[in-house]
Picture (cartoon, rainbow, N blue to C red):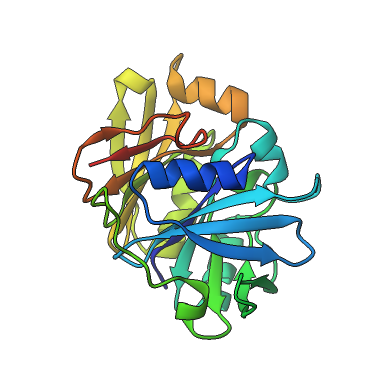
Length: 255
């Protein structure tokens, strides 16, 4: 069963600059390490609700990487991972509902202290990347993969709502209804020129918005394709959107 957000992926052009910028915003940022053979390094911002933000940068060009093209289109929020207690079963359910989902594979990361972190995952692929989730199961203690430093000077304690711009709302509703056992809640945002559906995933919520006419959601899909649009973080001392330049293009707001 899918039961929470594991993490959101934020692709950045310069990881060191991103780490400094997020620290200036009041986040505690922990070096994650390097993904062997993938050309990427990361840093993690972990919250008390157990979810986290992954800041991901490339140390070498990897045009075949799933997040290279989204980074070339502006980066920021590019993907999301959900926690599951039945990786094979949930991947199969999504696959049967119509998601282009990979078979189970293995991933790894070498932390700066030399510890090898390993996991098993299933990835949404092609046009479904960033609209359907990728799923992950631990291949070792979770604390090895997810740092324990979870307090932030800005007060943020977790992820509230993740908003995803989509171009085929009926299909997306079908996927998540199959995986979550709920048809979702209807949404309408005239100011965005969009309608959508809201699904709860444990303590977190996802809003999938499809354009009905001209507006920010249609503009986003035209520029970037169906993909994560924004996220709201909870517990912050001051509510409001964070500066896009300081978040490296990720549309984040505190609530």
